[in-house]
Every structure is written in structure tokens, then in C-alpha cells.
Image (cartoon, rainbow, N blue to C red):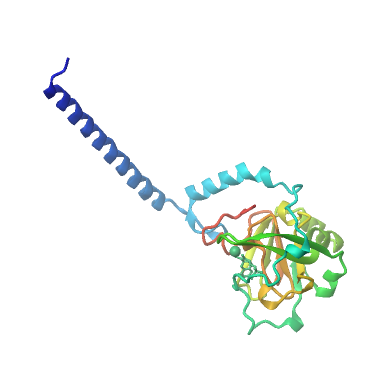
Length: 253
Ligand SMILES: Nc1nc2c(c(=O)[nH]1)N[C@H]1C(S)=C(S)[C@@H](COP(=O)(O)O)O[C@H]1N2
Ligand SMILES: [Mo]
């Protein structure tokens, strides 16, 4: 039997221990945060976030990537379900004052260093594919939207960009170079990924990326770059506007 004094002593010791471990944890947490802050930034094209966080994102990517394999089609809806006046989000790289639709062309930087250019008519020669999907923005909204255009995979195949299609990443940039995305090639070649020139059966409105935008339903909206100016390729990850601001590069759905 323990008397009252003993009980008090024991509980005081327990309290002390609890405090000690609490402060140890707190100290550990603070030290951990300090450590994280002192880690080199994962700079350059992969964005300025500490490397350990980037490593965690890369780890997530390994786990979730098989869930959105290119063979897996994103759900489609009837055209009647599509928003009549789709919301506009993001206008980086869409400065209308400096943009000249009359001289626009899609520039493609080939692997051999040459540049080839395409008109909208060149894109319309390819089979028109329509996709009605639930467009999702990372900011927390989504809407069913109806797009029309050429499959990116068809474009690369038809215009002899075979070596390019075998590279690991595709990059797109607006004509003014203000917005740019990097995309892993399997997602770029996905059958629902479009070089898109129509919304609701009409030419793309300027705010939605006239004359040509990307629609990539296997990714969040950030990757669906509006107003493509230049397309390029690399075996390494390519510059990405939102990855540089801390978002995941892969950002698949
Ligand atoms: N050029 C350009 N493309 C862009 C953006 C942007 O700011 N500039 N924002 C992206 C984001 S975050 C989203 S959600 C979609 C929105 O497309 P919408 O305006 O056609 O709905 O465009 C993407 N493409
Ligand atoms: Mo978005």
C-alpha cells in the first residue's frame, strides 16, 4: 500500500515527465522546423521549396501514379451537362494588348534544334475530338466543360514529331512567355489530351485561350495552359509556373 505522500510523489514525477517529454517534443518540432528551413531549396525549374518537402511530394507521386495510368480514361458526360458559360480562371500570359491573333502560330522546337510552325488550319486537318469532362481547379472548384480539338498524340504522330514524343517531358509556353507548364509525356500522350480550339462547339473565347490551348483532363486545371505559343521537349522536367510556386509538378487527378 502506498500512502498519500507516495501517491503525490509519483504523480508529481509523472507530471514532470510529461512536461519533460512535452518540451522535448516541442524542442524537437522547433529544431525540425529550423532544420527544414535550413535545407537547400529545390530551386530552378522544380520550384523553391525545401528539398525534403519536394522528396515527400515525389514519394506521393510514386504511390499515386499507377492510379492514373494513361490507359485509364477520365469520365465523360453528355454535352447537355456542360456549363453554358464556363468560368474563367487565371490570365497569366494572356496580355491582350500585346497579342496579335493575325500572326499567331504554334511554334515547335524540335529535338534537333530546328523550329517548325503550324497554323490553326494545320491543327484542324487532324480528326476533331470532343471531350466533355469535369474540369477541376486546385483552388477547389470544378465544372463540366465541353472542349474540341486535335489529340496532342495525333498532332505529334501526323507531323512526324516521333523523336520528340519519345522524350520524357513536354513543355508549353504562352506567346508572351508569361505562363508555362511542364508535363510528363505519358500524360501528354493520353487519348483525352487535346490541343483545343473549341469550347461548347465555338472557337475558344480569348479569356479561355484563343486560338489554341491545352486540355489535359488527367491533370488539375493549372496544366491546361491557355494560348499556346511554343511547344518543346526534354528528358528532364521542364519549367512550370505553379511548380515554381510550390505546387506538385505531376499534379494528376
Ligand atoms: N495562360 C494561362 N493558362 C492558364 C492559367 C493562366 O493563368 N494562364 N491558369 C490555369 C488555371 S489555374 C486554370 S484552373 C485554368 C482555367 O481555365 P479556364 O479559364 O478556361 O476555366 O486555366 C489554366 N491555364
Ligand atoms: Mo486552377
